[in-house]
Length: 158
Image 1: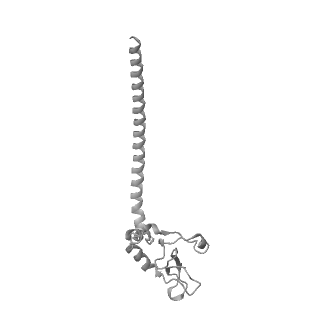
Image 2: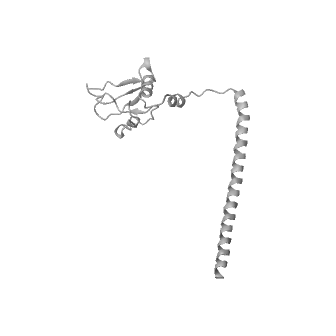
Image 3: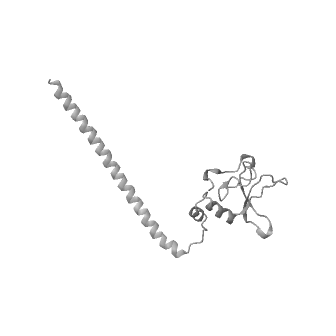
């Protein structure tokens, strides 16, 4: 299994080109023997335009280019399989925002109003508990102080 602690951000030497935030964790390349992190790129070729992929940049300008390459769909499945990413995390983190119908917004207003009312009531209850706690502590301090004073007066007779 691939260690979750082995993924990281892009190295500082590549910050200028890789300043965008990756959608998925960027892990150390498995194929390279050097300490190289996989990077996220977006395809500009017409047949895969705007499709994200992940690759290793080791030897990119030489004939010794690293062979690590995965399209986003394959990469996220691989991350889940290797234990770097939980399946539910990826699914919930990438929900698609859709336009909500007005009828849902109207019904949600009632729910939101109810939640707001409960929040205010809870805040008020906590405030009462806080005041009661302060009153209790004050009474306890006064009680202890009075007992100390009484004990001190009793001792003065001896």
